[in-house]
Image (cartoon, rainbow, N blue to C red; front, side, top):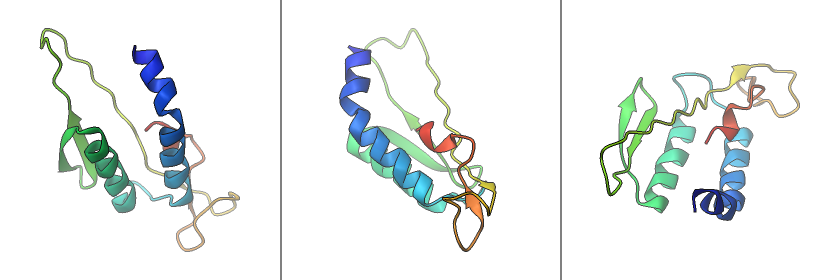
Amino acid sequence: RVCKAIVDAQPRLRELAESIMDEPELGFKEIKTSKKVQAMFDELGISYTTGHALTGVKGRMKGRDSKYTVAMVGELDAILCPRHPRADDLTGAAHCCGHNVQI
């Protein structure tokens, strides 16, 4: 069931990853990225808190059995790489490490 859910969500997840790729933000300045993650959590009905390490978002899902805990971490900051073909013209930030697809 999990694999099917991931496959079914692939178009939406790809769209989100591309959106993050198109608006790279440096570490601790991921304002737009944070809002995109929050919007996705809202869409999925996942409760969350914000303000972790300035722009971090922490989602929490409760299963039927709280015997186990699973953690997933996404690192969504960009790096300075002004020569990258998709670098932001103003900041020189770009997603060169694949962080945008960790969503």
